Image (cartoon, rainbow, N blue to C red; front, top):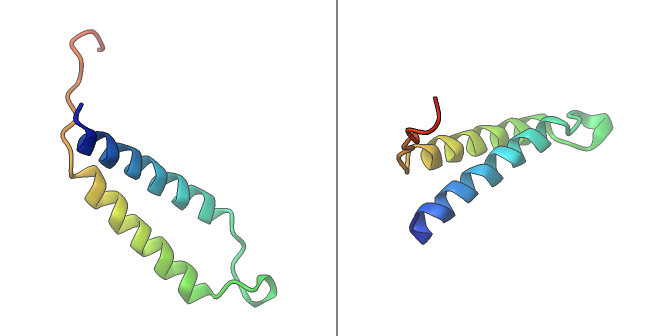
Length: 65
């Protein structure tokens, strides 16, 4: 694996983690989290995740079913 491939794969993992963490953030005025900003952040992270996932090719090992 080349360095750029490693960076893309780890970036995707980090973006995915950020999306999962953000789902735990409570939205609404009571929680001081603006709902439209929250949704925009999730949308942008989703786009990054898709772009990162499509930036490398996954080759399955013959040792794994």
